[in-house]
Length: 186
Image (cartoon, rainbow, N blue to C red; front, side):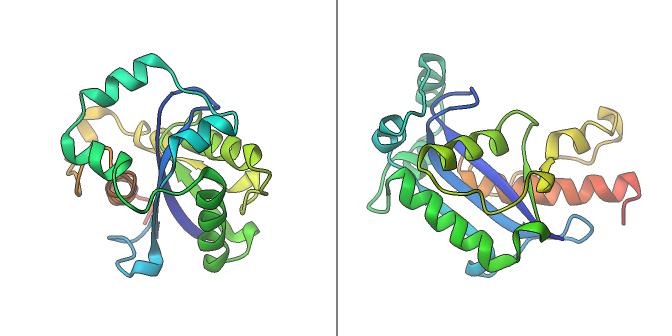
């Protein structure tokens, strides 16, 4: 199975939240570290306007939350010359996933059973693109972490900027690998 850790930055927290960044990396849950090659990592900033026009939703509490985040997190999500419409972002992500392997061989991990995977599914639906993996490939990072009592979990070490979608995906993949080891899932 080809494993991908997905992280989204959004302007809401519902199933149809407006996506503003997609980050992902390839990894082996039984291994150590994540793909370091550019082809093994994915990051794209998404135009908020295009996400809302596609029917995705914003909520005030998330907007206020973003105002409290670091300058680096806000800049890496909302500023730059590489911001693309939601349809282009989803298409690029699908191309990246398809290059990894056939849809039946893809596992996509998201942080929470009701967040990343459901929201990206809604985004693909909003722009009329098929999701590049099957529903059996959806995996929940948070569920695995919660198999360990808090006092048995490895120390959490952040990689990069908090709330940068790619940095969060890398951090989550590495932490999942560490939890797999503690759980004896080698």
